Length: 197
Length: 382
Image (tube, rainbow over all chains, first blue to last red):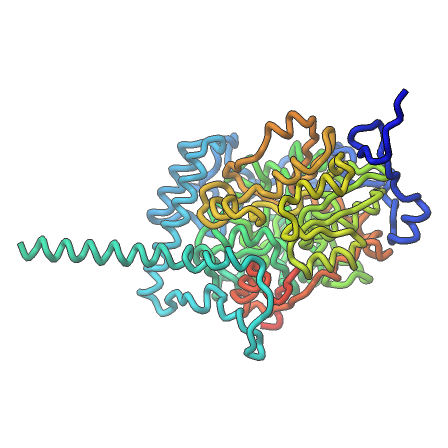
């Protein structure tokens, strides 16, 4: 029988060639090493633990929250859940798009999620435009947090996670505005030329 | 009340909003004392999560004082100081009855694929979150827990998600004594996952990231070996070399949908939204774990598909385990570990911002300026 030479890595033989440190060594170095070594001490083992009497619920099915009329829900649900969020009800054009996503497509269809994303963008653009007719217009300087580039003392903050990629952020944020302004300009110019004959 | 409100991708501000009201007999209203920004909040901030509506208030990591209770609430009283799990859950559905609190079926009408979460878009139920002065807390007799007298507030707020998720992530890895565990990502979840891996008997813990301050924290706080993937042409090959060409026994993916490390994936997913974020870390996990090994996924992903190397996972015979964390289930055991000093969540807090400066807080956290690892938000300071 041929013994493998010492430079043959573990993957090619039956056992790890460098054993793990001993329990004593690890306990001396790491606070609490092995405290949850026994899977029985791990709260998520096993995954399913039937214990409905320990949750704090004193109901078999919760009371239904009032105000359910018109609340959108996934068609993968049998009905509107008994409790639900009421943070930002559907409204306007974005609401119509989102409602179409919920009424027409299940969560299993990509169209469901893409319609919701489109609804998000319509919502954001509509809100930006409406804000300019309000007493509290959107302010890209304060709302993007770019002032956070400076610390409280006024000096530039250090560090940055991804200098290469961060350069893209202004393009991603400002790009749609520039493209939108360009489209408006071209549209207005075309309309003006049309009117002039 | 003052509350953070979303205005569109990369834009948010603090506005006056109506104080939340009791909408269900088992609701409570909590006055927020301390909140945090989670790495997963950045997915909302960057416009990656479908059905994130203008005006939404983010924030699923918060503690506070009970300000009002509904008519059926028995276990909490006005004035109690509580920590609130990020999961909203009923305690009585098929899933809650079996401990899957993060998969509750009675609280999120908008999707069956995810449970209810505070301040995390309408895809998780449409509940405003805790980066505000007040927040509505459904099922007050089920979710919140009174903060123990001995517990530091910063530990308490981190136990509502980030720390619990790190501990849960190590459990999903099914770590056996002596295992080599690789943790991808040295953010708050990854740091606690690394600490927790030792508790479960790991023989070696290696943390991979590319931010020097986070790798330093992994060495000092979690006693881990570290690899900076920017220093290697191919980090997967280095993972193989580090493990004697076996691959890691367990890989914990604690990065999620905004992974860096591959320019085209990052551009297509995170910046241009052409896929549901960037699956770089998940693919590194699949490549870097040994055949027959286990991948634990606790990095956050949304419902839009990703380009994941599923064939390699099949052909390597991998076990993939994942979920949103059922937080309250972790707490009794975690409280012991925190009290004994085995888990040290507040060691990773680097920044504290008043609520009024939350736009800057998101920018600093998103760009990782100033070595930001974990920012907290303090409403009462505003």
